[in-house]
Image (cartoon, rainbow, N blue to C red):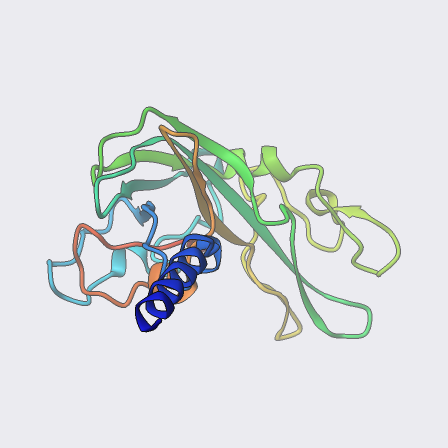
Length: 235
Protein backbone atom coordinates (compact mmCIF):
# COMPACT_ATOMS: atom_id res chain seq x y z
CA UNK A 1 0.00 0.00 0.00
CA UNK A 2 2.86 2.37 0.88
CA UNK A 3 4.54 1.67 -2.49
CA UNK A 4 1.27 2.34 -4.31
CA UNK A 5 0.86 5.68 -2.50
CA UNK A 6 4.42 6.76 -3.32
CA UNK A 7 3.93 5.80 -6.97
CA UNK A 8 0.65 7.70 -7.15
CA UNK A 9 2.24 10.84 -5.69
CA UNK A 10 5.11 10.57 -8.18
CA UNK A 11 2.67 10.42 -11.08
CA UNK A 12 0.77 13.47 -9.80
CA UNK A 13 3.98 15.49 -9.39
CA UNK A 14 5.16 14.48 -12.87
CA UNK A 15 1.85 15.56 -14.40
CA UNK A 16 1.89 18.89 -12.55
CA UNK A 17 5.46 19.65 -13.62
CA UNK A 18 4.75 18.57 -17.18
CA UNK A 19 1.76 20.92 -17.40
CA UNK A 20 3.58 23.95 -15.98
CA UNK A 21 3.26 27.11 -18.09
CA UNK A 22 6.88 28.11 -18.81
CA UNK A 23 5.75 31.63 -19.76
CA UNK A 24 5.03 32.15 -16.05
CA UNK A 25 8.47 30.99 -14.94
CA UNK A 26 10.20 34.01 -13.31
CA UNK A 27 13.62 32.41 -13.81
CA UNK A 28 13.58 32.10 -17.59
CA UNK A 29 17.04 32.41 -19.20
CA UNK A 30 18.01 35.78 -20.69
CA UNK A 31 17.39 36.15 -24.41
CA UNK A 32 20.19 37.61 -26.56
CA UNK A 33 20.13 41.35 -27.22
CA UNK A 34 22.09 44.20 -28.76
CA UNK A 35 22.79 47.79 -27.81
CA UNK A 36 24.84 50.63 -29.26
CA UNK A 37 27.14 53.50 -28.42
CA UNK A 38 27.03 56.79 -30.32
CA UNK A 39 29.69 59.46 -29.80
CA UNK A 40 30.94 62.79 -31.11
CA UNK A 41 33.52 61.65 -33.64
CA UNK A 42 36.11 64.37 -33.08
CA UNK A 43 36.38 63.95 -29.30
CA UNK A 44 39.05 61.37 -28.38
CA UNK A 45 37.82 58.19 -26.74
CA UNK A 46 38.65 57.89 -23.05
CA UNK A 47 41.34 55.52 -21.87
CA UNK A 48 40.10 51.97 -21.23
CA UNK A 49 39.11 51.39 -17.62
CA UNK A 50 38.64 55.08 -16.79
CA UNK A 51 35.48 57.15 -16.35
CA UNK A 52 36.40 59.56 -19.17
CA UNK A 53 33.29 59.54 -21.36
CA UNK A 54 33.59 63.07 -22.73
CA UNK A 55 33.03 61.82 -26.28
CA UNK A 56 29.38 61.10 -25.53
CA UNK A 57 28.65 63.61 -22.78
CA UNK A 58 25.64 65.88 -23.38
CA UNK A 59 26.55 68.96 -25.45
CA UNK A 60 30.08 67.69 -26.00
CA UNK A 61 29.78 69.34 -29.41
CA UNK A 62 27.19 71.86 -30.62
CA UNK A 63 26.07 73.65 -33.76
CA UNK A 64 27.44 77.19 -34.22
CA UNK A 65 25.19 80.23 -33.94
CA UNK A 66 26.09 81.41 -37.45
CA UNK A 67 27.53 79.97 -40.64
CA UNK A 68 25.27 76.96 -40.32
CA UNK A 69 25.06 76.35 -44.07
CA UNK A 70 28.60 74.99 -43.90
CA UNK A 71 28.35 73.35 -40.48
CA UNK A 72 27.95 69.69 -39.60
CA UNK A 73 27.99 67.42 -36.57
CA UNK A 74 30.34 64.45 -37.06
CA UNK A 75 29.32 61.34 -35.14
CA UNK A 76 29.98 57.63 -35.09
CA UNK A 77 28.06 54.66 -33.76
CA UNK A 78 28.83 51.02 -33.09
CA UNK A 79 26.52 48.18 -32.18
CA UNK A 80 27.43 45.66 -29.50
CA UNK A 81 26.39 42.05 -29.03
CA UNK A 82 27.90 40.84 -25.77
CA UNK A 83 27.34 37.15 -26.52
CA UNK A 84 27.83 37.38 -30.32
CA UNK A 85 24.47 35.70 -30.91
CA UNK A 86 22.89 38.52 -32.93
CA UNK A 87 24.09 40.50 -35.94
CA UNK A 88 22.86 44.02 -36.69
CA UNK A 89 22.06 44.54 -40.37
CA UNK A 90 20.63 48.07 -40.23
CA UNK A 91 20.93 51.12 -38.01
CA UNK A 92 18.28 53.83 -38.25
CA UNK A 93 19.37 57.15 -36.76
CA UNK A 94 16.71 59.64 -35.64
CA UNK A 95 16.92 63.23 -34.47
CA UNK A 96 14.36 65.15 -32.44
CA UNK A 97 14.23 68.93 -32.17
CA UNK A 98 13.14 70.46 -28.87
CA UNK A 99 11.58 73.92 -29.16
CA UNK A 100 11.63 76.22 -26.13
CA UNK A 101 9.41 79.24 -25.51
CA UNK A 102 7.51 81.21 -22.87
CA UNK A 103 3.72 80.86 -22.92
CA UNK A 104 1.25 83.78 -22.51
CA UNK A 105 1.16 83.16 -18.75
CA UNK A 106 4.91 83.58 -18.45
CA UNK A 107 5.65 79.88 -18.00
CA UNK A 108 8.68 78.29 -19.69
CA UNK A 109 7.67 75.53 -22.10
CA UNK A 110 9.41 72.92 -24.22
CA UNK A 111 7.92 70.76 -26.94
CA UNK A 112 9.24 67.83 -28.95
CA UNK A 113 8.72 68.68 -32.61
CA UNK A 114 9.37 65.12 -33.75
CA UNK A 115 7.46 63.18 -31.08
CA UNK A 116 10.59 61.23 -30.28
CA UNK A 117 12.50 61.87 -33.49
CA UNK A 118 12.47 61.66 -37.28
CA UNK A 119 14.76 59.52 -39.40
CA UNK A 120 17.82 61.49 -40.48
CA UNK A 121 20.20 58.67 -41.48
CA UNK A 122 19.97 54.98 -42.33
CA UNK A 123 23.08 52.81 -42.18
CA UNK A 124 22.57 49.65 -44.21
CA UNK A 125 25.02 46.78 -43.76
CA UNK A 126 26.84 48.39 -40.82
CA UNK A 127 30.34 47.39 -39.77
CA UNK A 128 30.74 44.24 -37.62
CA UNK A 129 30.23 43.96 -33.87
CA UNK A 130 31.98 46.76 -31.92
CA UNK A 131 33.26 48.49 -35.08
CA UNK A 132 32.53 52.16 -35.79
CA UNK A 133 30.16 53.54 -38.42
CA UNK A 134 30.59 57.25 -39.17
CA UNK A 135 27.91 59.75 -40.19
CA UNK A 136 27.17 63.47 -40.02
CA UNK A 137 24.11 65.60 -39.33
CA UNK A 138 23.83 69.13 -40.72
CA UNK A 139 21.65 72.08 -39.70
CA UNK A 140 20.08 72.00 -43.16
CA UNK A 141 19.03 68.37 -42.69
CA UNK A 142 17.30 69.28 -39.44
CA UNK A 143 15.64 72.27 -41.09
CA UNK A 144 14.35 70.03 -43.89
CA UNK A 145 12.88 67.60 -41.35
CA UNK A 146 11.18 70.25 -39.23
CA UNK A 147 10.49 73.21 -41.52
CA UNK A 148 6.74 72.53 -41.40
CA UNK A 149 6.55 71.80 -37.65
CA UNK A 150 4.14 74.02 -35.74
CA UNK A 151 3.64 75.12 -32.14
CA UNK A 152 0.69 76.88 -30.52
CA UNK A 153 2.73 79.53 -28.76
CA UNK A 154 -0.42 81.41 -27.72
CA UNK A 155 -2.23 78.14 -26.87
CA UNK A 156 -4.61 78.68 -29.82
CA UNK A 157 -2.96 79.33 -33.17
CA UNK A 158 -0.48 76.93 -34.77
CA UNK A 159 2.59 78.79 -36.04
CA UNK A 160 5.42 77.27 -38.04
CA UNK A 161 8.51 77.22 -35.84
CA UNK A 162 10.77 78.46 -38.62
CA UNK A 163 8.35 81.27 -39.51
CA UNK A 164 7.64 82.50 -35.99
CA UNK A 165 7.94 86.33 -36.13
CA UNK A 166 8.77 86.43 -32.42
CA UNK A 167 11.96 84.48 -33.09
CA UNK A 168 13.39 85.20 -36.55
CA UNK A 169 15.43 82.40 -38.10
CA UNK A 170 17.41 83.77 -41.06
CA UNK A 171 19.20 81.52 -43.54
CA UNK A 172 22.56 80.45 -42.16
CA UNK A 173 21.26 80.80 -38.60
CA UNK A 174 17.95 78.94 -38.65
CA UNK A 175 18.84 76.99 -35.53
CA UNK A 176 18.83 79.40 -32.63
CA UNK A 177 20.74 79.89 -29.43
CA UNK A 178 19.08 81.15 -26.26
CA UNK A 179 16.77 84.15 -26.77
CA UNK A 180 17.28 86.86 -24.16
CA UNK A 181 14.94 89.86 -23.91
CA UNK A 182 15.60 92.60 -21.38
CA UNK A 183 18.12 90.43 -19.57
CA UNK A 184 15.60 87.58 -19.25
CA UNK A 185 15.85 84.29 -21.12
CA UNK A 186 12.50 83.81 -22.84
CA UNK A 187 13.58 80.77 -24.84
CA UNK A 188 16.41 78.31 -24.35
CA UNK A 189 18.62 77.32 -27.25
CA UNK A 190 17.26 74.79 -29.72
CA UNK A 191 18.07 71.33 -28.42
CA UNK A 192 18.51 68.08 -30.34
CA UNK A 193 18.33 64.44 -29.31
CA UNK A 194 19.82 61.71 -31.49
CA UNK A 195 18.48 58.17 -30.97
CA UNK A 196 18.66 54.93 -32.95
CA UNK A 197 16.98 51.66 -33.81
CA UNK A 198 18.88 48.43 -34.45
CA UNK A 199 17.56 45.71 -36.76
CA UNK A 200 19.14 42.25 -36.62
CA UNK A 201 19.53 39.58 -39.29
CA UNK A 202 16.61 37.60 -37.85
CA UNK A 203 14.24 40.58 -38.00
CA UNK A 204 14.37 41.72 -34.38
CA UNK A 205 14.21 45.49 -33.81
CA UNK A 206 15.76 47.06 -30.71
CA UNK A 207 14.81 50.66 -29.91
CA UNK A 208 14.15 50.75 -26.15
CA UNK A 209 16.69 49.84 -23.48
CA UNK A 210 16.93 49.87 -19.69
CA UNK A 211 17.59 53.44 -18.58
CA UNK A 212 19.96 52.72 -15.70
CA UNK A 213 22.07 49.87 -17.05
CA UNK A 214 22.19 50.73 -20.78
CA UNK A 215 21.26 54.39 -21.28
CA UNK A 216 23.22 55.59 -18.25
CA UNK A 217 25.90 52.91 -18.49
CA UNK A 218 27.81 53.13 -15.16
CA UNK A 219 30.71 50.90 -16.25
CA UNK A 220 34.24 52.16 -17.03
CA UNK A 221 35.32 52.90 -20.60
CA UNK A 222 35.37 49.71 -22.69
CA UNK A 223 34.33 48.35 -26.08
CA UNK A 224 31.06 47.24 -24.50
CA UNK A 225 29.91 50.72 -23.42
CA UNK A 226 26.41 51.89 -24.31
CA UNK A 227 24.05 54.83 -24.41
CA UNK A 228 20.56 55.47 -25.76
CA UNK A 229 20.81 59.05 -26.94
CA UNK A 230 23.24 61.82 -27.81
CA UNK A 231 22.30 65.40 -26.93
CA UNK A 232 23.54 68.68 -28.38
CA UNK A 233 22.38 72.25 -28.83
CA UNK A 234 23.32 75.58 -30.50
CA UNK A 235 26.05 77.78 -29.02
